[in-house]
Each structure stands twice: as structure tokens, then as C-alpha cells.
Image (cartoon, helix red, strand yellow):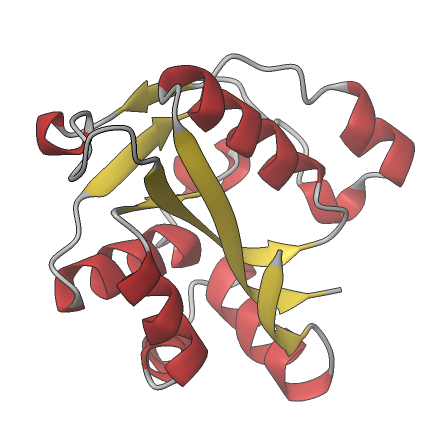
Length: 170
């Protein structure tokens, strides 16, 4: 699991404005900073497909732009990589992760996600080679969600090498 920034000070302030207040200038700034980061491009060059950790129920019903999804889509587009869609159950994460204890986060992660894999990604480039998937998230708190998503992707893509890239880690 790699992360680009620590979730503190200015980085935290910008992400909070983006996620909880719907700050569009901050959202665009986060995307720009992510796309200017050479480590993000190195990770995209390595992978065969890009996936984003899904938004919480709370974010979806409030209509907030989802930072992880936008980061994944933009990075995939720049590198001409397919996007793997990870779709959460309707009521996944009624309570925001940041408002939950570590034990609460760990307790309910056995959730079935639906994964939509582009047809051109189900066939590897070389016989016997693994499919390399870059899983992107905006903030990593405990890493539990990324672990569950990596397991889900591994179950869907039998021969997959999954690595994660996180914008900011606590």
C-alpha cells in the first residue's frame, strides 16, 4: 500500500472541504496535485486496469463528487487504461468511516461488492501472466476497506496482482 501524502494540516483541510463541504475548487486542486505526482504515473504505467474504492452511502446520497473515483478515471484516461467498476451494496457504510472506531470499521467489512471488469481486461496480454490492478482510494484510515476490496478483486480476477495507491494516509 503506497500513499502520496500524510493526512494532516493543509492536505487534510483540502480533503475535508472536498468531501464534506463539496468544495469544487479544492476537488479540482486535489485531482491536479494527484495527476502531477510522478509516483501516480509510475503506478499507472505498471497496471493493466485501474479501480477506485467506492464512496460511502452518505457521500452518494448527498451528491458529493467522489475523489477516489475521479482520481482513478483521470489517471486511467491519461494512460489509456480500462477502469474497473466496484459497486457497493446500496446501504454500504451508512455511517462515515471517520466517525467510527477501528473496531467498528473492522466489524462490518464483510460486504459483497459487485465488480464490473471490462472485457478487454479479462484476457491477459501474455499467456499465464497476471492482471495488474491499481486500486485507488482518497484517504486510508485503517486499510481494512482496501483489504476487502483487494480480496473481492482477487476473487473476480483469479490471476490478479493488486496494488493500492492512496492520496493521503492517516
